[in-house]
Image (tube, rainbow, N blue to C red; front, side):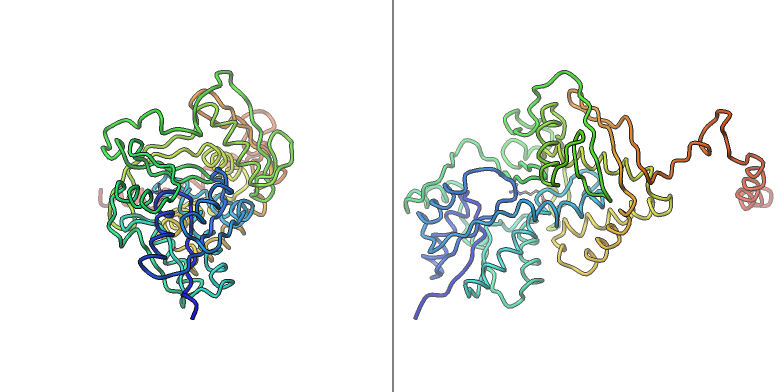
Length: 394
Ligand code: ARG
């Protein structure tokens, strides 16, 4: 009888490389390693060889960059999604696309189980497991890193003992997760929230430019479609802004966030493209969304961000909120001009063919078409309740 199969979400890092071996040796699985390209960079041929060297019976490499940009990042951009007002959900958004492929590959290989390399303290285990159960509740889920009780040094020893070619050193103890939408760095000295992040944690936001630049972003119904007049796919817009805004040192975040599992953790992020795009997109909405719609959308954005952070991408409420967000984007078409300067990016102009900004209503010049005499009665009635309260009770 052939051995039971499992598909492992494989990053090529120390933990998942050790997990390939461990799932085979300790759990008796035939392991299929699945690596997903979400724009994190790195050489997938090296990753493929490493998985085989660690004992995988097969390796699947999935290029999910466009899918990640269109199906996951774009809905988050429509929502201007920032967890706790700051974090653009870099890792939170990539887990559901990885889950989608993990479940698909498991079904293709006839595997009854899937595995991930998350620890028991983080959010990512929640995102993997809740997502897997939403897409295929029949799959068994293994979480070797949560079970085996290895320290980092133990994992390095285990890899050496089994001749797994890993590239980990005991010196740089950072946990890094990167994709098209940004980069997250944890651990090491940063576990003291007062300690400044060491300079060598940054990769996407190393300042090299000193001369200010203008960057014009074009949106079509909420979708970023070009930079400086050049038409680009969504993923290309993000890549372009990562490079151009990152070169000014823009896009760093240092925050203590509330994990789903009840821990406060200090996180350092780099997300120049994400933060620049959200800034521009939200600005274009300021001229294209009616007031009540804009305000309600901002309230629901908080909820959307929490759901995505909490691993509920595949849930009816997240799907319904995305339908709402998508509907609001019908007139979010136009251009936003950003200025990049060392360590900052700001908006200094926006325009839209569907703009609700009405010059004749807004102007203080002679073209003014606002009916000033209407204001007197409006304001009197607006304040009537407060006036009555003041007369009788205050
Ligand atoms: N704290 C972030 C989140 O929960 C990032 C987690 C990234 N994972 C990592 N291995 N650094 O979305």
